[in-house]
Length: 140
Image (cartoon, rainbow, N blue to C red; front, side, top):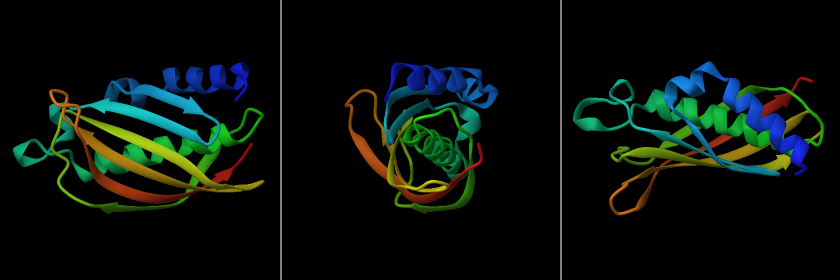
């Protein structure tokens, strides 16, 4: 990934009001790979403190989108065509960590696999909470 492309992605990430609201952090950004961290807030949880599934799906969508954008050399915009999330276990922990990988990046359509982990800050243990397959379409 060129430094210019990385700056475009970081600038887009930092402009997002939603990501600011979530206190999201862009952890890694490489060609065909993006990782995002979201710390737990009360509004994101269900009973007993587990992350709500909607929060996980939102993280999957954002991570997959940035991973798709990272695949293309030029500045572009993508939209979600299809998003499937399998919730593997209750997401109990201090923050969510996504790892989004481009499986196939085409001229218009990209397929992304995004794994979501819940992390215990004290131990650093990552627990696999959800796995997903996402299709994104390049618009610009």
